Image 1 (cartoon, rainbow, N blue to C red):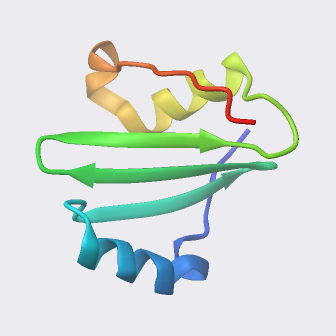
Image 2 (spheres, rainbow, N blue to C red):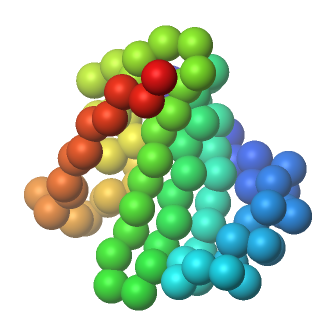
Length: 84
């Protein structure tokens, strides 16, 4: 499993979001059919994993935590929503 950085494909929408939100860093990755959005706001990071075709697996969540949380893995707080 590996994440591919596709941030440059979303440059227009990222520039718009950076102007209108408190985020100061945004990266977008693909993880197979799943999309991973990593936002850094003052004081904390936010990572959103989404897939329109199927639910996110525990293996994907653990992989993304390992890749993006690095040293702060014990401080990760998970929220799970099943958007329809």
